[in-house]
Length: 323
Image 1 (cartoon, rainbow, N blue to C red):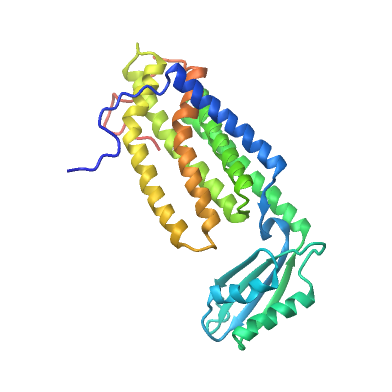
Image 2 (cartoon, rainbow, N blue to C red; image 1 turned 90 degrees about the vertical axis):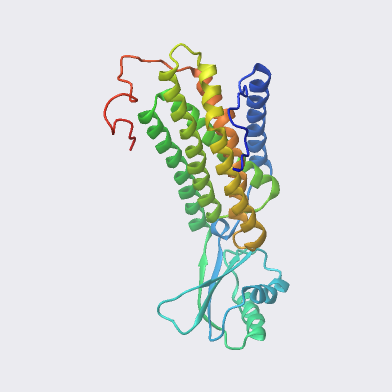
């Protein structure tokens, strides 16, 4: 007996006037709300984007990150990131990287504060040695923000070009609209809940772009096949049929991914919680946008059916292989 999250041979109408108007309106409203939240509340930037100080410590005993955090927290230094790293030049030592956000009015943590951190950690573990102290100023942080924005924009532009080549320009507009929808809503939710926004979240945004694109391409590929298979069928019916045919795969992929992400969110600890939260949100809105945004945009633009091209379903054994 096989598990089915979606009934077989579903015939749901995703583009009824009431449903289409409601979902498209909600998407536009959510995007506007996200933009308003971004400009009014802003993002809670982490050390990567605000600047701060990085301290590397060496210890002869194993690192207990939670104990380090408990020792530093009473100092009231704000955002503190503690990570154990492996240094090839010091194979016999346990190396830790401690990042502390810039304090109000200072570009970096003062020497007096560093002494307090040193005393707090050595009270827990006397063998700790401060190997290096480095500061990241506002200029470098500003450059990181610009680089992160360019990374997301160029990724979306590459997707636009790829979908345009593989399908038609109407498909690419729908796919990119879905990606922009997902990224804007993710930034909006981070502005609302004020979770730390750092380079790890940028990595999550790029991952969301790839995940959402994968879902969209699966649907669009079936749409392209059905446009040739049902030449007299309306585009609305072709889209409905294609989404229903791939719905089981879409839901199963999303649910299994969410199970793993929720486990990481609950058990993974504070270090990766922001990244995992972004991924959970991205999987949900990415699945939604593949159906209710990308396909809806395609329906509004329409598709030119050129039957002068050879049907890829006919021909030799390797005709239907798509690189």
